[in-house]
Image (cartoon, rainbow, N blue to C red):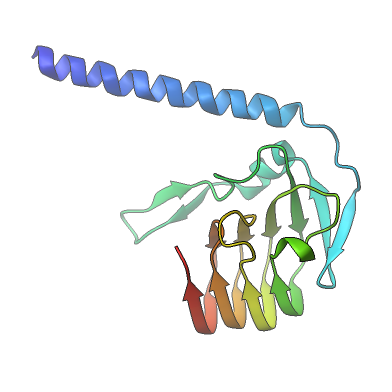
Length: 169
């Protein structure tokens, strides 16, 4: 019984530490200054610039996995805590959506890019920097000819349509 009790205590301690880390993150997000600009354009698409604290609840409860085994996912996990979220409320379309740092708005620390509806890129959606690109979240459908997935989290809440998908760790 002692071994079981000790294992339960360790699990509870781990959960408490995780909750404390999460509370500290939320506090940092609450104290994040207002964005330096209200909106930006990237690849012809208009994005509102949001503090992470303002974007996080808009994402809602996101889950992935097969029915019956679905897990909650935080697509902003791993994103820069000090960065801002680019948020597109409308359906978006462009020729190519490239997350490479050279295409991100200059002087703006981008933590993540979120499409609240659909993203259609005629040619490609590309992940940018192999190690540290911002997460891309599409809550609706994502349609493109080529999808290059690398750099950080890619989350598609609807249907993914791509003729070619390339992933790198």
